[in-house]
Image 1 (spheres, one colour):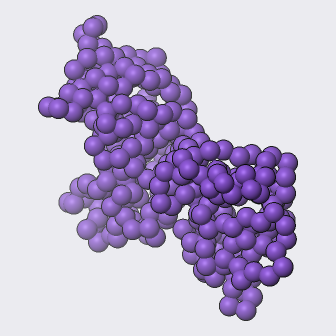
Image 2: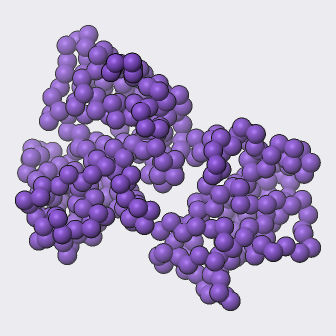
Length: 351
């Protein structure tokens, strides 16, 4: 998917100016509330008319003020998923799903009902009314309804923000799986950098109506490491654990990790902040932390007042952070060896 937008839109004192070209199947639009994200995708979908500029999707001009082109929303074949599911309360789950399918021209239909239901695990819900569903189930139905329209682009505007963490990390695998299986590119809008890293490959970051950064989600996370309170979040996918004296033991990094938190699924996803990793130049004689990993310094980078340290632990990677003075005192540089100490309680299960 290739998208080119050079548009402007003003609402009173707020003005959005966007000029970019992006390619890919998993695009993110990131920024705080009020940065212009929803206005931007509203213009893309045809829900908001730009004051000026052009919008081209896969070589087709959707809008051009200069050429007098403004393709109606219903002909753009862009499906939307919002914060709230906005399902039709008088229709069953089955008929909500078929609504998008029935409105799609036969020549564009490429998503079949039964495979989609299986991917979203909706088999047992088809005859239910949507008011009898949980929040996570409703959002899965909303995703399915949008995908059944066989769009050429799926736009998701903060689709996870109304969900708690447990539901959020249940929905994310469904989102990535359904778009990947049916070959539907998507634009994912969020103010959560963690969601960006789990959902997207390329991110456009907006601030006060301006595009300020464009790159991968991981690059963005590294640059912002020293600017917030949480640091860089390492994402670890761990297999089946083995109990060990009240702790859970996982194979990782050519060795093992001991965690106090129980996994939420058989193969769980955990987060670990760069600020919860203590680095040593030499093997410490005794520490209270249950995890001590030997790693090779692959790279270092600067972010605010902190130095990020990327460590290779076997075939796996960790990013730790230290203040610049500590990096100098430990003589941290690529090719050197360090020991990383991590408390068993520092890992947080996500799903």
